[in-house]
Image (cartoon, rainbow, N blue to C red):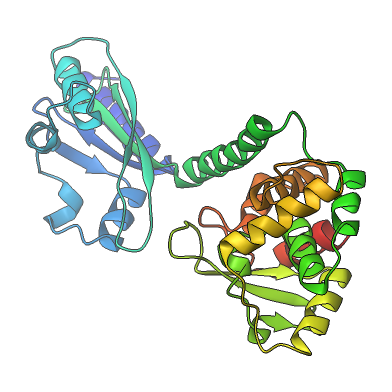
Length: 318
């Protein structure tokens, strides 16, 4: 096989490999100019308003990076630009960096990988951008759940046991006291979510409740939660005589603290401790981090699909 045919075969093989990659990928020449891109690269550009012709082929990828990066020495774009420059100088160097590229209606993260190409004329560097948003969201979910569990452990050496929770519930003397304590134990609501509930938030037949997120909290604006039988009975009894639930945050905190003290469980019991215990109990029942986030109203998770609702119903009502 003569040299030209061998070079042509190498180029064809490189292009076939490029098109087979599932991530956005481009090949650069000796000047850092894009000479080829694959279909995922082209489709991503079309979806996100890439204005350069031919999906960037013929444009200098290296120049874009050099004009883009910030002053920080560990800036991802700076690292990519330096790695490309070193590769074009013949150095055997490569890199993999994580960066964010958020859209107008969603958060997105990517890895950028740079790797030199050897033995293919006109093709010197491979650049691959891979969407790792799902991985980053999973990490954030785990981090949030870990914060919940860590917060509990800072306040107590262990979560409240079932017997302690029963004692706290039994220490409540009035309907209002039982309503507050049972709702916090069974549903893990924030106090700011509890004190703005109205009859319209309840579906007695499902049975379920629509919880509205407070302005100072993160997470979905509203979320769905299944009601336990005892919580439904207490709320139905309460709304039979009152049009809405109205108590201040301080009043709720005092009721919970008093119940803990009367039950002999804790002199400093707080609504947050009950909420955190709720999260720990979900984990102990086998809930995933995503399901805990759904139930707690943290992160971006929201129990909209049928299977998630069924699993939450099993965990909370079971």
